[in-house]
Length: 318
Length: 318
Image (cartoon, rainbow over all chains, first blue to last red; front, side):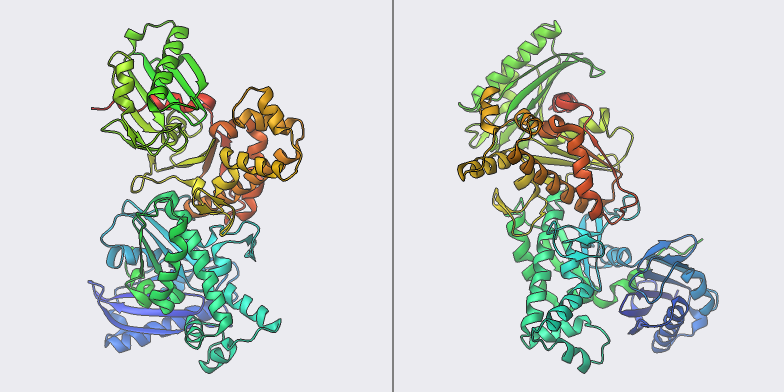
Protein backbone atom coordinates (compact mmCIF):
# COMPACT_ATOMS: atom_id res chain seq x y z
CA UNK A 1 0.00 0.00 0.00
CA UNK A 2 1.44 3.35 -1.07
CA UNK A 3 -0.41 6.38 0.22
CA UNK A 4 -0.18 9.97 -0.98
CA UNK A 5 -0.73 12.80 1.46
CA UNK A 6 -0.85 16.47 0.55
CA UNK A 7 -1.01 19.53 2.75
CA UNK A 8 -2.29 22.41 0.62
CA UNK A 9 -1.63 25.71 2.32
CA UNK A 10 -1.76 29.36 1.42
CA UNK A 11 2.03 29.43 1.18
CA UNK A 12 3.18 25.93 0.31
CA UNK A 13 2.22 22.56 -1.06
CA UNK A 14 3.69 19.67 0.94
CA UNK A 15 3.42 16.15 -0.47
CA UNK A 16 4.46 12.83 1.04
CA UNK A 17 4.46 9.21 -0.07
CA UNK A 18 3.88 6.88 2.89
CA UNK A 19 3.62 3.17 3.50
CA UNK A 20 0.80 1.68 5.56
CA UNK A 21 2.66 2.48 8.81
CA UNK A 22 2.92 6.12 7.71
CA UNK A 23 6.66 5.98 7.27
CA UNK A 24 7.54 8.78 4.87
CA UNK A 25 9.23 7.28 1.81
CA UNK A 26 9.52 10.49 -0.16
CA UNK A 27 8.39 14.08 0.09
CA UNK A 28 8.27 17.33 -1.85
CA UNK A 29 7.61 20.89 -0.79
CA UNK A 30 7.02 23.80 -3.11
CA UNK A 31 5.38 27.22 -3.00
CA UNK A 32 1.66 27.40 -3.70
CA UNK A 33 1.24 29.22 -7.04
CA UNK A 34 0.57 32.88 -6.34
CA UNK A 35 -1.11 33.43 -9.69
CA UNK A 36 -3.47 31.37 -11.82
CA UNK A 37 -6.49 29.61 -10.46
CA UNK A 38 -7.59 26.27 -9.05
CA UNK A 39 -6.50 24.17 -12.08
CA UNK A 40 -2.98 25.60 -11.75
CA UNK A 41 -2.99 24.61 -8.08
CA UNK A 42 -4.14 21.10 -9.04
CA UNK A 43 -1.31 20.93 -11.60
CA UNK A 44 1.23 22.03 -9.00
CA UNK A 45 -0.03 19.41 -6.54
CA UNK A 46 0.25 16.66 -9.16
CA UNK A 47 3.80 17.74 -10.00
CA UNK A 48 4.72 17.80 -6.34
CA UNK A 49 3.37 14.26 -5.89
CA UNK A 50 5.30 13.08 -8.94
CA UNK A 51 8.50 14.53 -7.49
CA UNK A 52 7.87 12.90 -4.09
CA UNK A 53 7.15 9.56 -5.79
CA UNK A 54 10.34 9.87 -7.75
CA UNK A 55 12.34 10.53 -4.59
CA UNK A 56 10.62 7.53 -2.96
CA UNK A 57 11.56 5.43 -5.94
CA UNK A 58 8.00 4.38 -6.67
CA UNK A 59 6.05 4.56 -9.89
CA UNK A 60 2.98 6.79 -10.10
CA UNK A 61 1.01 3.73 -11.19
CA UNK A 62 1.82 2.04 -7.86
CA UNK A 63 0.08 4.71 -5.76
CA UNK A 64 -3.00 3.35 -3.93
CA UNK A 65 -4.90 6.47 -2.95
CA UNK A 66 -4.40 10.11 -2.02
CA UNK A 67 -5.63 12.50 0.64
CA UNK A 68 -5.46 16.28 0.57
CA UNK A 69 -5.84 18.65 3.47
CA UNK A 70 -7.12 21.93 2.04
CA UNK A 71 -8.21 25.31 3.40
CA UNK A 72 -11.73 26.64 2.86
CA UNK A 73 -14.96 24.73 2.90
CA UNK A 74 -14.75 21.10 1.90
CA UNK A 75 -17.58 19.00 0.54
CA UNK A 76 -16.17 15.54 1.24
CA UNK A 77 -18.71 13.64 -0.89
CA UNK A 78 -18.39 15.94 -3.91
CA UNK A 79 -14.64 16.38 -3.50
CA UNK A 80 -14.97 20.15 -3.81
CA UNK A 81 -13.19 23.05 -2.15
CA UNK A 82 -14.83 26.48 -1.89
CA UNK A 83 -14.17 29.75 -0.05
CA UNK A 84 -10.45 29.05 0.13
CA UNK A 85 -9.50 32.66 0.66
CA UNK A 86 -5.81 31.88 1.18
CA UNK A 87 -5.53 30.29 -2.28
CA UNK A 88 -5.07 32.30 -5.51
CA UNK A 89 -8.28 33.26 -7.35
CA UNK A 90 -10.14 30.41 -5.72
CA UNK A 91 -13.57 31.85 -6.48
CA UNK A 92 -16.58 29.57 -6.11
CA UNK A 93 -16.28 25.83 -5.81
CA UNK A 94 -13.66 23.62 -7.51
CA UNK A 95 -13.76 19.83 -7.71
CA UNK A 96 -10.20 19.36 -6.50
CA UNK A 97 -10.71 15.68 -5.59
CA UNK A 98 -11.85 14.45 -9.02
CA UNK A 99 -9.54 16.86 -10.88
CA UNK A 100 -6.48 15.72 -8.98
CA UNK A 101 -7.60 12.10 -9.30
CA UNK A 102 -7.54 12.47 -13.08
CA UNK A 103 -4.02 13.89 -12.96
CA UNK A 104 -2.93 10.89 -10.84
CA UNK A 105 -4.20 8.19 -13.19
CA UNK A 106 -7.61 7.78 -11.60
CA UNK A 107 -6.76 6.87 -7.99
CA UNK A 108 -9.29 7.94 -5.33
CA UNK A 109 -8.56 11.34 -3.74
CA UNK A 110 -10.06 12.17 -0.34
CA UNK A 111 -10.34 15.75 0.85
CA UNK A 112 -10.30 17.07 4.37
CA UNK A 113 -10.04 20.38 6.17
CA UNK A 114 -6.33 21.25 6.37
CA UNK A 115 -6.29 22.01 10.05
CA UNK A 116 -8.48 19.04 11.00
CA UNK A 117 -6.13 16.79 9.05
CA UNK A 118 -3.13 18.14 10.93
CA UNK A 119 -4.93 17.76 14.25
CA UNK A 120 -5.85 14.18 13.45
CA UNK A 121 -2.23 13.43 12.59
CA UNK A 122 -1.11 14.70 16.00
CA UNK A 123 -3.96 12.76 17.63
CA UNK A 124 -3.15 9.43 15.99
CA UNK A 125 0.61 9.63 15.46
CA UNK A 126 1.99 12.67 17.27
CA UNK A 127 1.93 14.74 20.45
CA UNK A 128 -1.69 13.86 21.26
CA UNK A 129 -1.45 10.10 21.01
CA UNK A 130 -1.37 9.52 24.80
CA UNK A 131 -4.29 11.78 25.81
CA UNK A 132 -7.98 11.60 24.97
CA UNK A 133 -8.48 15.36 24.78
CA UNK A 134 -6.37 18.23 23.49
CA UNK A 135 -6.53 21.44 21.49
CA UNK A 136 -4.38 21.89 18.39
CA UNK A 137 -3.37 25.44 17.55
CA UNK A 138 -1.83 25.90 14.12
CA UNK A 139 -0.17 29.19 13.32
CA UNK A 140 0.50 29.73 9.66
CA UNK A 141 -0.92 32.19 7.16
CA UNK A 142 -3.90 32.18 9.49
CA UNK A 143 -4.44 30.57 12.88
CA UNK A 144 -6.46 27.37 12.76
CA UNK A 145 -7.31 24.91 15.43
CA UNK A 146 -8.86 21.61 16.26
CA UNK A 147 -10.64 20.40 19.36
CA UNK A 148 -10.23 16.75 20.31
CA UNK A 149 -12.55 15.77 23.17
CA UNK A 150 -12.85 12.20 24.40
CA UNK A 151 -10.87 10.83 21.43
CA UNK A 152 -13.14 12.56 18.91
CA UNK A 153 -12.49 15.62 16.77
CA UNK A 154 -15.31 17.92 17.83
CA UNK A 155 -16.84 19.53 14.72
CA UNK A 156 -20.01 21.07 16.16
CA UNK A 157 -22.25 22.03 13.27
CA UNK A 158 -19.24 21.53 10.97
CA UNK A 159 -17.14 24.60 11.66
CA UNK A 160 -15.80 24.09 15.16
CA UNK A 161 -12.17 24.61 16.06
CA UNK A 162 -11.71 28.26 15.11
CA UNK A 163 -9.41 29.15 17.95
CA UNK A 164 -7.95 31.80 15.62
CA UNK A 165 -11.29 33.56 15.92
CA UNK A 166 -11.30 33.61 19.68
CA UNK A 167 -11.70 37.24 20.76
CA UNK A 168 -8.81 38.46 22.89
CA UNK A 169 -9.43 42.19 22.58
CA UNK A 170 -13.10 43.10 22.17
CA UNK A 171 -13.10 46.17 19.86
CA UNK A 172 -9.44 45.40 19.03
CA UNK A 173 -7.60 45.21 15.73
CA UNK A 174 -9.91 44.67 12.74
CA UNK A 175 -9.21 41.47 10.80
CA UNK A 176 -11.29 39.42 8.36
CA UNK A 177 -14.44 41.27 9.39
CA UNK A 178 -14.03 40.68 13.10
CA UNK A 179 -12.16 42.64 15.77
CA UNK A 180 -9.40 41.64 18.13
CA UNK A 181 -9.39 37.92 17.37
CA UNK A 182 -6.26 35.82 17.91
CA UNK A 183 -5.56 35.64 14.17
CA UNK A 184 -5.44 39.44 13.95
CA UNK A 185 -2.27 39.29 16.06
CA UNK A 186 -0.87 35.81 15.49
CA UNK A 187 -1.65 34.99 11.87
CA UNK A 188 1.30 35.49 9.51
CA UNK A 189 -0.83 37.37 6.97
CA UNK A 190 -2.04 39.81 9.61
CA UNK A 191 1.46 40.15 11.06
CA UNK A 192 2.87 40.93 7.62
CA UNK A 193 0.15 43.53 6.99
CA UNK A 194 1.00 45.24 10.27
CA UNK A 195 4.73 45.06 9.66
CA UNK A 196 4.29 46.71 6.26
CA UNK A 197 2.00 49.35 7.72
CA UNK A 198 4.45 50.22 10.49
CA UNK A 199 7.39 50.27 8.07
CA UNK A 200 5.41 52.57 5.77
CA UNK A 201 4.88 54.83 8.80
CA UNK A 202 8.65 55.01 9.27
CA UNK A 203 9.55 52.18 11.61
CA UNK A 204 12.82 50.48 10.74
CA UNK A 205 12.99 46.76 10.15
CA UNK A 206 15.01 44.23 8.22
CA UNK A 207 11.97 42.07 7.48
CA UNK A 208 11.74 43.04 3.80
CA UNK A 209 15.48 42.67 3.30
CA UNK A 210 15.41 39.19 4.85
CA UNK A 211 12.35 38.27 2.78
CA UNK A 212 14.12 39.31 -0.41
CA UNK A 213 17.37 37.59 0.55
CA UNK A 214 15.38 34.38 1.02
CA UNK A 215 13.66 34.91 -2.33
CA UNK A 216 10.22 34.78 -0.72
CA UNK A 217 7.20 36.65 -2.10
CA UNK A 218 5.76 36.94 1.41
CA UNK A 219 7.00 37.08 4.98
CA UNK A 220 7.15 33.31 5.40
CA UNK A 221 7.75 31.73 8.81
CA UNK A 222 11.49 31.48 8.16
CA UNK A 223 11.60 35.23 7.55
CA UNK A 224 10.16 35.91 10.99
CA UNK A 225 12.54 33.39 12.60
CA UNK A 226 15.54 35.03 10.92
CA UNK A 227 14.37 38.52 11.90
CA UNK A 228 14.17 37.44 15.55
CA UNK A 229 17.68 36.04 15.25
CA UNK A 230 19.04 39.43 14.19
CA UNK A 231 17.04 41.17 16.95
CA UNK A 232 14.83 43.07 14.57
CA UNK A 233 12.76 45.26 16.93
CA UNK A 234 9.61 45.35 14.81
CA UNK A 235 9.61 41.60 14.28
CA UNK A 236 10.26 41.02 17.99
CA UNK A 237 7.38 43.28 18.89
CA UNK A 238 4.94 41.62 16.49
CA UNK A 239 5.96 38.09 17.53
CA UNK A 240 5.59 39.10 21.18
CA UNK A 241 2.09 40.33 20.41
CA UNK A 242 1.32 37.04 18.66
CA UNK A 243 2.46 35.11 21.75
CA UNK A 244 0.39 37.39 23.99
CA UNK A 245 -2.74 36.91 21.87
CA UNK A 246 -2.21 33.14 21.68
CA UNK A 247 -1.56 32.90 25.43
CA UNK A 248 -4.77 34.75 26.24
CA UNK A 249 -6.87 32.91 23.65
CA UNK A 250 -5.56 29.53 24.79
CA UNK A 251 -6.26 30.46 28.42
CA UNK A 252 -9.90 31.15 27.50
CA UNK A 253 -10.18 27.77 25.84
CA UNK A 254 -8.52 25.95 28.74
CA UNK A 255 -10.80 27.69 31.25
CA UNK A 256 -13.77 26.58 29.15
CA UNK A 257 -12.77 23.00 28.33
CA UNK A 258 -10.14 22.08 30.96
CA UNK A 259 -8.10 19.91 28.58
CA UNK A 260 -4.72 18.48 29.67
CA UNK A 261 -2.79 19.34 26.51
CA UNK A 262 -2.28 22.09 23.93
CA UNK A 263 -0.36 21.26 20.76
CA UNK A 264 1.21 24.19 18.91
CA UNK A 265 1.89 23.66 15.22
CA UNK A 266 1.78 25.40 11.88
CA UNK A 267 4.68 26.87 9.97
CA UNK A 268 5.15 29.83 12.28
CA UNK A 269 4.77 27.74 15.44
CA UNK A 270 7.28 25.14 14.27
CA UNK A 271 9.81 27.65 12.94
CA UNK A 272 9.75 29.78 16.10
CA UNK A 273 9.80 26.58 18.17
CA UNK A 274 10.26 26.15 21.90
CA UNK A 275 10.83 29.84 22.78
CA UNK A 276 7.50 30.61 21.07
CA UNK A 277 5.80 27.91 23.17
CA UNK A 278 7.47 29.15 26.37
CA UNK A 279 6.33 32.72 25.78
CA UNK A 280 2.77 31.59 25.01
CA UNK A 281 2.79 29.66 28.30
CA UNK A 282 3.99 32.71 30.20
CA UNK A 283 1.08 34.76 28.84
CA UNK A 284 -1.41 31.91 29.31
CA UNK A 285 -0.68 30.84 32.87
CA UNK A 286 -1.72 34.00 34.79
CA UNK A 287 -5.09 33.89 33.01
CA UNK A 288 -5.94 30.31 33.99
CA UNK A 289 -8.53 29.38 36.58
CA UNK A 290 -6.35 26.40 37.54
CA UNK A 291 -2.99 28.13 37.58
CA UNK A 292 -1.46 25.39 39.72
CA UNK A 293 -2.58 22.67 37.32
CA UNK A 294 -2.04 24.08 33.84
CA UNK A 295 -2.22 21.97 30.68
CA UNK A 296 0.99 20.83 29.01
CA UNK A 297 1.81 23.02 25.99
CA UNK A 298 4.02 21.31 23.42
CA UNK A 299 5.09 21.60 19.80
CA UNK A 300 3.42 19.43 17.18
CA UNK A 301 5.58 16.31 16.89
CA UNK A 302 5.07 15.63 13.23
CA UNK A 303 6.44 19.03 12.35
CA UNK A 304 6.14 20.32 8.82
CA UNK A 305 4.98 16.95 7.53
CA UNK A 306 2.04 16.64 9.94
CA UNK A 307 -0.58 17.99 7.58
CA UNK A 308 0.58 15.83 4.69
CA UNK A 309 0.97 12.66 6.76
CA UNK A 310 -2.39 13.39 8.38
CA UNK A 311 -3.97 13.57 4.92
CA UNK A 312 -3.00 9.92 4.37
CA UNK A 313 -5.31 9.10 7.32
CA UNK A 314 -8.37 10.47 5.49
CA UNK A 315 -10.88 7.76 4.64
CA UNK A 316 -11.16 7.32 0.86
CA UNK A 317 -14.24 8.90 -0.77
CA UNK A 318 -16.98 6.50 -1.77
CA UNK B 1 -41.52 10.15 45.72
CA UNK B 2 -40.93 13.63 47.14
CA UNK B 3 -37.68 15.24 46.12
CA UNK B 4 -35.95 18.23 47.67
CA UNK B 5 -33.85 20.50 45.50
CA UNK B 6 -31.76 23.41 46.76
CA UNK B 7 -29.87 26.08 44.87
CA UNK B 8 -27.31 27.55 47.25
CA UNK B 9 -26.00 30.84 45.87
CA UNK B 10 -23.91 33.71 47.11
CA UNK B 11 -27.05 35.83 47.43
CA UNK B 12 -29.95 33.46 48.00
CA UNK B 13 -31.05 30.00 49.02
CA UNK B 14 -33.80 28.59 46.78
CA UNK B 15 -35.55 25.39 47.84
CA UNK B 16 -38.19 23.35 46.03
CA UNK B 17 -40.21 20.24 46.81
CA UNK B 18 -40.88 18.26 43.61
CA UNK B 19 -42.70 15.12 42.64
CA UNK B 20 -41.08 12.50 40.40
CA UNK B 21 -42.08 14.47 37.27
CA UNK B 22 -40.35 17.54 38.72
CA UNK B 23 -43.57 19.45 39.22
CA UNK B 24 -42.84 22.04 41.90
CA UNK B 25 -45.20 21.43 44.83
CA UNK B 26 -43.75 24.07 47.11
CA UNK B 27 -40.82 26.47 47.18
CA UNK B 28 -39.01 28.91 49.41
CA UNK B 29 -36.46 31.58 48.68
CA UNK B 30 -34.46 33.49 51.27
CA UNK B 31 -31.20 35.43 51.46
CA UNK B 32 -28.01 33.48 52.09
CA UNK B 33 -26.80 34.46 55.58
CA UNK B 34 -24.18 37.20 55.20
CA UNK B 35 -22.63 36.41 58.58
CA UNK B 36 -21.88 33.23 60.46
CA UNK B 37 -20.27 30.23 58.88
CA UNK B 38 -21.11 26.97 57.11
CA UNK B 39 -23.29 25.55 59.97
CA UNK B 40 -25.45 28.70 59.83
CA UNK B 41 -25.84 28.21 56.08
CA UNK B 42 -26.84 24.58 56.69
CA UNK B 43 -29.39 25.76 59.27
CA UNK B 44 -30.81 28.30 56.84
CA UNK B 45 -31.11 25.65 54.11
CA UNK B 46 -32.93 23.28 56.47
CA UNK B 47 -35.34 26.06 57.49
CA UNK B 48 -35.95 26.93 53.86
CA UNK B 49 -36.74 23.30 53.03
CA UNK B 50 -39.12 23.10 56.00
CA UNK B 51 -40.93 26.19 54.75
CA UNK B 52 -41.18 24.80 51.21
CA UNK B 53 -42.47 21.48 52.56
CA UNK B 54 -45.07 23.32 54.63
CA UNK B 55 -46.25 25.25 51.56
CA UNK B 56 -46.39 21.96 49.61
CA UNK B 57 -48.45 20.45 52.41
CA UNK B 58 -46.05 17.57 52.93
CA UNK B 59 -44.43 16.34 56.14
CA UNK B 60 -40.66 16.49 56.49
CA UNK B 61 -40.75 12.75 57.24
CA UNK B 62 -42.21 12.10 53.78
CA UNK B 63 -39.20 13.56 51.92
CA UNK B 64 -37.32 10.93 49.91
CA UNK B 65 -33.98 12.56 49.19
CA UNK B 66 -32.38 15.94 48.63
CA UNK B 67 -29.94 17.50 46.18
CA UNK B 68 -28.01 20.73 46.63
CA UNK B 69 -26.29 22.76 43.94
CA UNK B 70 -23.48 24.64 45.66
CA UNK B 71 -20.67 26.98 44.62
CA UNK B 72 -17.02 26.13 45.23
CA UNK B 73 -15.36 22.77 44.93
CA UNK B 74 -17.56 19.76 45.56
CA UNK B 75 -16.40 16.34 46.65
CA UNK B 76 -19.43 14.31 45.65
CA UNK B 77 -18.43 11.14 47.53
CA UNK B 78 -17.57 12.94 50.78
CA UNK B 79 -20.43 15.41 50.48
CA UNK B 80 -18.11 18.32 51.16
CA UNK B 81 -17.93 21.87 49.81
CA UNK B 82 -14.70 23.84 49.85
CA UNK B 83 -13.35 27.09 48.35
CA UNK B 84 -16.84 28.59 48.18
CA UNK B 85 -15.64 32.17 48.02
CA UNK B 86 -19.14 33.58 47.51
CA UNK B 87 -20.38 32.10 50.81
CA UNK B 88 -19.78 33.69 54.24
CA UNK B 89 -16.63 32.57 56.08
CA UNK B 90 -16.57 29.32 54.16
CA UNK B 91 -12.95 28.58 54.98
CA UNK B 92 -11.68 25.06 54.34
CA UNK B 93 -13.96 22.15 53.68
CA UNK B 94 -17.43 21.60 55.19
CA UNK B 95 -19.44 18.36 55.02
CA UNK B 96 -22.63 20.04 53.85
CA UNK B 97 -24.18 16.80 52.60
CA UNK B 98 -24.02 14.82 55.87
CA UNK B 99 -24.70 17.93 58.00
CA UNK B 100 -27.82 18.83 56.05
CA UNK B 101 -28.89 15.18 55.99
CA UNK B 102 -28.86 15.17 59.81
CA UNK B 103 -31.03 18.29 59.89
CA UNK B 104 -33.49 16.58 57.51
CA UNK B 105 -34.00 13.42 59.56
CA UNK B 106 -31.32 11.37 57.86
CA UNK B 107 -32.40 11.42 54.20
CA UNK B 108 -29.59 11.15 51.60
CA UNK B 109 -28.29 14.51 50.37
CA UNK B 110 -26.46 14.71 47.03
CA UNK B 111 -24.21 17.64 46.20
CA UNK B 112 -23.40 19.08 42.79
CA UNK B 113 -21.73 22.14 41.34
CA UNK B 114 -24.35 24.90 41.31
CA UNK B 115 -23.84 25.89 37.71
CA UNK B 116 -23.62 22.32 36.43
CA UNK B 117 -26.87 21.56 38.21
CA UNK B 118 -28.59 24.51 36.54
CA UNK B 119 -27.18 23.50 33.16
CA UNK B 120 -28.41 19.95 33.59
CA UNK B 121 -31.87 21.24 34.48
CA UNK B 122 -32.00 23.23 31.22
CA UNK B 123 -30.64 20.18 29.37
CA UNK B 124 -33.20 17.71 30.69
CA UNK B 125 -36.24 19.90 31.33
CA UNK B 126 -35.66 23.35 29.86
CA UNK B 127 -34.38 25.33 26.89
CA UNK B 128 -31.82 22.68 25.91
CA UNK B 129 -34.11 19.66 25.82
CA UNK B 130 -34.38 19.58 22.00
CA UNK B 131 -30.67 19.94 21.13
CA UNK B 132 -27.72 17.70 21.87
CA UNK B 133 -25.23 20.52 22.39
CA UNK B 134 -25.45 23.96 23.98
CA UNK B 135 -23.61 26.33 26.25
CA UNK B 136 -25.25 27.61 29.43
CA UNK B 137 -24.16 31.05 30.63
CA UNK B 138 -25.30 31.95 34.13
CA UNK B 139 -24.90 35.55 35.25
CA UNK B 140 -25.27 36.01 38.96
CA UNK B 141 -22.80 37.07 41.64
CA UNK B 142 -20.24 35.61 39.24
CA UNK B 143 -20.58 34.29 35.70
CA UNK B 144 -20.66 30.51 35.49
CA UNK B 145 -21.23 28.24 32.58
CA UNK B 146 -21.73 24.72 31.42
CA UNK B 147 -20.80 23.03 28.17
CA UNK B 148 -23.14 20.30 26.91
CA UNK B 149 -21.66 18.47 23.92
CA UNK B 150 -23.34 15.46 22.36
CA UNK B 151 -25.82 15.13 25.25
CA UNK B 152 -23.05 15.09 27.85
CA UNK B 153 -21.97 17.79 30.27
CA UNK B 154 -18.31 18.25 29.35
CA UNK B 155 -16.25 18.46 32.54
CA UNK B 156 -12.70 18.14 31.19
CA UNK B 157 -10.39 17.43 34.08
CA UNK B 158 -13.24 18.47 36.40
CA UNK B 159 -13.29 22.23 36.06
CA UNK B 160 -14.59 22.86 32.55
CA UNK B 161 -17.31 25.39 31.79
CA UNK B 162 -15.72 28.57 33.10
CA UNK B 163 -17.07 30.84 30.40
CA UNK B 164 -16.90 33.63 32.99
CA UNK B 165 -13.13 33.29 32.77
CA UNK B 166 -12.99 33.67 29.03
CA UNK B 167 -10.63 36.55 28.28
CA UNK B 168 -12.32 39.35 26.34
CA UNK B 169 -9.77 42.08 26.96
CA UNK B 170 -6.22 40.78 27.35
CA UNK B 171 -4.59 43.13 29.91
CA UNK B 172 -8.09 44.43 30.77
CA UNK B 173 -9.83 44.99 34.08
CA UNK B 174 -8.27 42.99 36.97
CA UNK B 175 -10.67 40.54 38.63
CA UNK B 176 -10.12 37.50 40.82
CA UNK B 177 -6.43 37.36 39.88
CA UNK B 178 -7.00 37.46 36.13
CA UNK B 179 -7.42 40.34 33.72
CA UNK B 180 -10.21 41.25 31.34
CA UNK B 181 -12.29 38.08 31.77
CA UNK B 182 -16.04 38.11 31.13
CA UNK B 183 -16.82 38.01 34.85
CA UNK B 184 -14.84 41.22 35.43
CA UNK B 185 -17.51 43.03 33.37
CA UNK B 186 -20.60 40.84 33.67
CA UNK B 187 -20.52 39.40 37.20
CA UNK B 188 -22.76 41.24 39.65
CA UNK B 189 -20.04 41.39 42.32
CA UNK B 190 -17.61 43.00 39.86
CA UNK B 191 -20.30 45.35 38.55
CA UNK B 192 -21.14 46.45 42.08
CA UNK B 193 -17.46 47.07 42.86
CA UNK B 194 -17.14 49.24 39.77
CA UNK B 195 -20.37 51.10 40.46
CA UNK B 196 -19.20 51.92 43.98
CA UNK B 197 -15.79 52.99 42.72
CA UNK B 198 -17.28 55.30 40.10
CA UNK B 199 -19.77 56.75 42.59
CA UNK B 200 -16.92 57.35 45.03
CA UNK B 201 -15.17 59.21 42.21
CA UNK B 202 -18.20 61.48 41.86
CA UNK B 203 -20.45 59.83 39.29
CA UNK B 204 -24.13 60.14 40.07
CA UNK B 205 -26.31 57.09 40.34
CA UNK B 206 -29.47 55.94 42.09
CA UNK B 207 -28.12 52.40 42.55
CA UNK B 208 -27.51 52.74 46.31
CA UNK B 209 -30.85 54.43 46.87
CA UNK B 210 -32.66 51.64 44.99
CA UNK B 211 -30.67 49.01 46.90
CA UNK B 212 -31.65 50.56 50.21
CA UNK B 213 -35.29 51.00 49.18
CA UNK B 214 -35.37 47.29 48.37
CA UNK B 215 -33.75 46.50 51.70
CA UNK B 216 -30.89 44.63 50.02
CA UNK B 217 -27.39 44.40 51.48
CA UNK B 218 -25.91 44.16 47.96
CA UNK B 219 -26.77 45.29 44.47
CA UNK B 220 -28.95 42.28 43.70
CA UNK B 221 -30.24 41.60 40.19
CA UNK B 222 -33.52 43.38 40.90
CA UNK B 223 -31.57 46.51 41.86
CA UNK B 224 -29.89 46.58 38.45
CA UNK B 225 -33.21 45.95 36.70
CA UNK B 226 -34.88 48.80 38.58
CA UNK B 227 -31.94 51.15 37.90
CA UNK B 228 -32.27 50.47 34.15
CA UNK B 229 -35.97 51.21 34.40
CA UNK B 230 -35.29 54.67 35.82
CA UNK B 231 -32.59 55.28 33.17
CA UNK B 232 -29.76 55.43 35.67
CA UNK B 233 -26.76 56.32 33.45
CA UNK B 234 -24.14 54.49 35.49
CA UNK B 235 -26.22 51.31 35.68
CA UNK B 236 -26.98 51.52 31.94
CA UNK B 237 -23.30 51.89 31.18
CA UNK B 238 -22.24 48.95 33.36
CA UNK B 239 -25.00 46.69 32.04
CA UNK B 240 -24.05 47.64 28.47
CA UNK B 241 -20.45 46.67 29.26
CA UNK B 242 -21.67 43.36 30.69
CA UNK B 243 -23.60 42.67 27.47
CA UNK B 244 -20.57 43.62 25.39
CA UNK B 245 -18.28 41.30 27.37
CA UNK B 246 -20.78 38.45 27.24
CA UNK B 247 -21.36 38.94 23.50
CA UNK B 248 -17.64 38.78 22.78
CA UNK B 249 -16.97 35.87 25.13
CA UNK B 250 -19.88 33.88 23.73
CA UNK B 251 -18.69 34.60 20.17
CA UNK B 252 -15.30 33.09 21.06
CA UNK B 253 -16.97 29.98 22.40
CA UNK B 254 -19.28 29.65 19.40
CA UNK B 255 -16.35 30.06 17.00
CA UNK B 256 -14.54 27.32 18.89
CA UNK B 257 -17.36 24.82 19.43
CA UNK B 258 -20.00 25.75 16.80
CA UNK B 259 -22.95 24.85 19.02
CA UNK B 260 -26.53 25.62 17.89
CA UNK B 261 -27.75 27.11 21.17
CA UNK B 262 -26.73 29.43 23.99
CA UNK B 263 -28.89 29.51 27.13
CA UNK B 264 -28.63 32.65 29.27
CA UNK B 265 -29.61 32.26 32.91
CA UNK B 266 -28.66 33.31 36.41
CA UNK B 267 -30.32 35.98 38.52
CA UNK B 268 -29.01 38.90 36.49
CA UNK B 269 -29.75 37.24 33.14
CA UNK B 270 -33.31 36.35 34.13
CA UNK B 271 -34.09 39.70 35.75
CA UNK B 272 -32.78 41.73 32.79
CA UNK B 273 -34.52 39.29 30.45
CA UNK B 274 -35.03 39.52 26.71
CA UNK B 275 -33.46 42.98 26.18
CA UNK B 276 -30.29 41.64 27.86
CA UNK B 277 -30.30 38.65 25.49
CA UNK B 278 -30.94 40.89 22.47
CA UNK B 279 -28.03 43.18 23.34
CA UNK B 280 -25.71 40.21 23.91
CA UNK B 281 -26.69 38.90 20.46
CA UNK B 282 -25.97 42.27 18.87
CA UNK B 283 -22.45 42.25 20.34
CA UNK B 284 -21.91 38.56 19.56
CA UNK B 285 -23.02 38.39 15.94
CA UNK B 286 -20.37 40.61 14.28
CA UNK B 287 -17.67 38.51 15.95
CA UNK B 288 -18.90 35.15 14.63
CA UNK B 289 -17.17 33.19 11.89
CA UNK B 290 -20.61 32.00 10.73
CA UNK B 291 -22.45 35.29 10.95
CA UNK B 292 -25.19 34.05 8.61
CA UNK B 293 -25.81 30.95 10.72
CA UNK B 294 -25.59 32.10 14.33
CA UNK B 295 -26.67 29.98 17.27
CA UNK B 296 -30.02 30.65 18.92
CA UNK B 297 -29.58 32.64 22.14
CA UNK B 298 -32.44 32.20 24.59
CA UNK B 299 -33.27 32.72 28.26
CA UNK B 300 -33.15 29.75 30.62
CA UNK B 301 -36.67 28.32 30.66
CA UNK B 302 -36.76 27.13 34.23
CA UNK B 303 -36.03 30.64 35.43
CA UNK B 304 -35.19 31.22 39.06
CA UNK B 305 -36.13 27.67 40.00
CA UNK B 306 -33.76 26.01 37.51
CA UNK B 307 -30.91 25.47 39.93
CA UNK B 308 -33.17 24.05 42.62
CA UNK B 309 -35.16 21.83 40.25
CA UNK B 310 -31.88 20.72 38.64
CA UNK B 311 -30.59 19.69 42.07
CA UNK B 312 -33.42 17.14 42.27
CA UNK B 313 -31.83 15.47 39.23
CA UNK B 314 -28.58 14.76 41.10
CA UNK B 315 -28.01 11.05 41.63
CA UNK B 316 -28.15 10.18 45.35
CA UNK B 317 -24.78 9.64 47.04
CA UNK B 318 -23.85 6.04 47.76
